[in-house]
Amino acid sequence: MMRRPTVADLLARRGQRPLPMLRVETLDEARAAGHAGVPMLSVPPALLLDPRFREAAPEAFAIPGANFHEIGGPEAFLTWALPLCKAGADAVYCAGSLAAVRLLADHAIPVCGHVGLIPSKCTWTGGFRAVGKTLDTAKLVWRQVRALEEAGAFAAEIEVVPHSVARLIADRSRLFLISMGAGPGFGAQYLFSSDVLGETAGHVPRHAKVYRDFAAEHARLQAERVAAYGAFAADVADGSYPGPQHVVEAGDEMLEAFRDWLDGEG
Image (tube, rainbow, N blue to C red; front, side, top):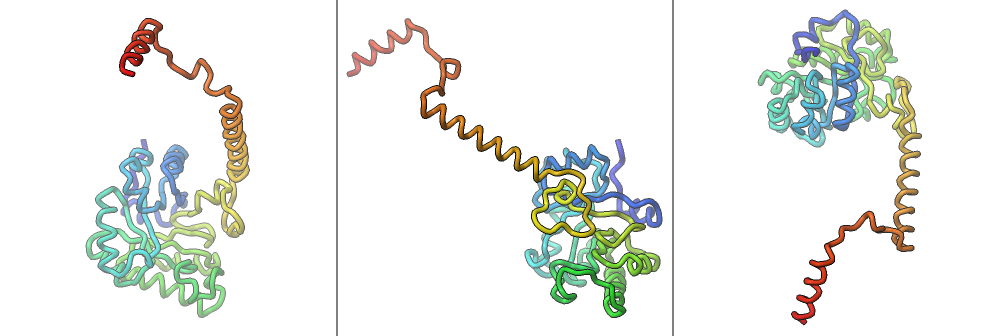
């Protein structure tokens, strides 16, 4: 059995072969990731708080995260993070303010920040597009990394940043950088389970790689579900369900006694 990584383990791995990392949403996905040997997981807070999660993924370095708009300011982030750490979170994701990162770090809570394309803040960088293709935006990503370092974060997701820019930043940063669409050569490579399994509806991000076609399988199962429900409804309508094999009968002697009793009650 593999030992669950620590923050110190991850930081010591910088410059080595990257680790795979997945965003999982369910216990089944977490369990499958564990069986597949995926050592890092991003998870919804509710999943991390489910006591079955650690049974499903006992060796995973788990980072719960939620949109900072749903959490609030620094004190709210701390209140949000403490029960997660108690439940077994190895770190927490924070795309909120640097003040929130500082407060969490001050309480010895490992923090993973976010730089580059930050979906919850992308209006400032032109929407859902690469960040770092111009000199000014490349400088912005570098300053984001430096600010997280100074605030006490140990890691950051670097999302949709040109690989050459991201590499220059990684070579100069002490953070454990997690690449999502920023190319190879980082501490971890991060994809969403829904992309890996082919469940994403509509646009599939350029950096995603689809390994299975679960959408087709879900469609097949839905068709089978409809067919099964329809067959059940038809059996009820024509009286073929329930059949003798689906019911329980009483003994003749008891039934006769019960009938006599009912007649007497009437």
